[in-house]
Length: 486
Image (cartoon, rainbow, N blue to C red):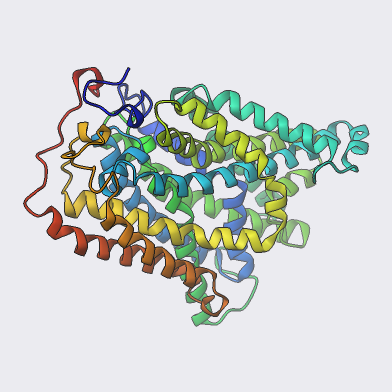
C-alpha cells in the first residue's frame, strides 16, 4: 500500500528505504569475492603479465586501481546506507523523480547484456564438463539452433533457470548464497592451482621477470592502462552500490567489507592469477591464461569436475552482483505500481535471452564498442550523484520527497526532471564516448572516463550550486513510521 501523500507510480516495498539491515562486514566482503573471483578478472590480470609487465608491476597497478575503486565505493556506500534507498531512488535526488529513469535505464541495459553473456559463458563450461563426463553427448554439440547446439541450449537454459530460482527469491537469499558459495570456493581452487604449479615448478616462479622486454616508458604506460581499466570496470558497481550498502548494519560494515574485499582480496587474487600464469610457463612450456584449461591439464577427473563446477559457480557469482540486482531495481523504478524487484528481475532475465548473448560475444566490434561506452556513460553519472550528495546538498536529503511527484516537492524540478543534471550528463558522456570509441584516440581511450567524470561533476556543480544556495533541506528526514529503517 502506498503511504499517504506518496505518488503511487514512484513507490513500492522494494524501492522503499530498507526495513531490515542484516548485511555485516562479511556479507560485503563475500559480495566482492563473488564479483572479483571471475574468470574475466583472472584473464585480465594474466593478460597484463603476458603483455610484458612483471608480476610485481601487475600487482601494484591493480592495487592502485582497486584502491581508487575502494574510495568510490565508500563514498557511494555512505549515501546508500544513510538513506536506505536503492540506486534508482537515490538518483531521483539529482535527476528528478522521473529523470532518474535515464541513469537507471543506462545501467540496466548494460547489466542485462552482460547478464546474458556471463550466463552463456557459464553454460559453455557446463557443456565441456558434460562431454567430459559423458563423451556420448558430443554428438549433440554439432547441430545449430539459432547459434547454439542442442546441448548448448540445454546448458544455457539450465544455467539461466538455476540463477533465476536464486535471484528472484530476494536480496536476503542472494546474501546467504554469496556468503558461503561463490567467493570461498574459488579461493580454495585458486590456492590449489597455485600450490600444484609451484610444486611442479620446483618453486621456481619469479615475481620480477616478464615475458616481453618493454621499455621503461611502455611499462609505465601499460601500468597506467591497467589502473584505468580496473577503475572503468568497477564503475558500474560504484554507480549502483547503494543497492547493497542500504542493507548494511552500520557505516563500519560496508567500509570494512570494502577494505577486505577490494584492496586486500582483489590484489591478492590478481597476484595469485599472475603467479599461476607464470607457473604454466615452467610446467607446460607456454602461457595459459584460462584457469579451466589448467584444471583440465592436471589429468585428474575429480579435480577437473570440481574445478569446472567451481568456475561455473564463480561466473554465477559475478552475475548476481554486477548484472542482476541493478536491472531488477532499475526496471522496477520504471513502473513501481506494477513492477517490483522480482518482476523486474524476471523481465531482465527474459531480455538477456532475447538479445542472444552468444552472438553479441562473437562480434568483436560490438563488444569493443559496448565496453568502450561503458565507463564513458557511467562516469558522468557517478560524478553527478556524488557531487550532488557531498557538495551541493552536503548529505541533506528529504526522504519523503523521493516518492512525491508534485509541485513543491524537493526533487520534482521541472515536470519531474532536473534539467541541470541533463546539461551536465549529455556533453560529458558525449566527450567520453568520442575518446573511448574513435580509433584516433585509442592511446587515451582507457582514460576517457576521467574526462567524463571531471566534466560531468564540474558542470553539474557549477550549474546547480546557485540554484540550491540557501534552499537546502534540513538534515535527512526520516520516512513515515511504517518505513522506518533499522
